[in-house]
Image 1: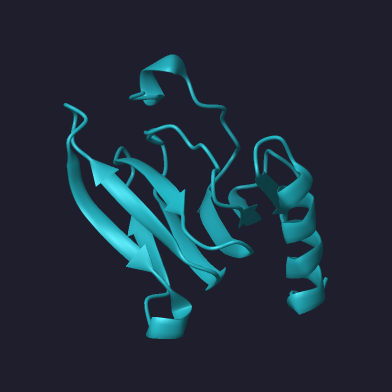
Image 2: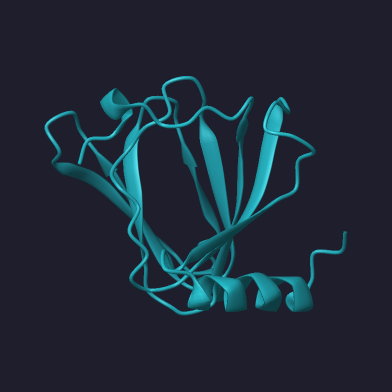
Length: 130
């Protein structure tokens, strides 16, 4: 599969018509894969709860667009904010295992490449801050 503008445009178009304003395209073969590699198209208004992944770190690389990634402490106070914008040389962020985080989409057509250890495990209630 070629990762090109056409593919990013297709996924972004799907995100724009999605109720969640979000669409992903898995690049791994199964949810049991040891490496989860995902393209995530995100639109302004996407709601991603503050959450953590206790079993894995994850890395976001912003391919296009503009997003802020926020880290939080256990009380829910914001502890760091990373403004990602490849046009200005800010390409990605590494999120340690167990770190509370979320993101805010600031530009239509934003797409991230996300990598984390597998297998895929759905978020448990204790992994959602709010």
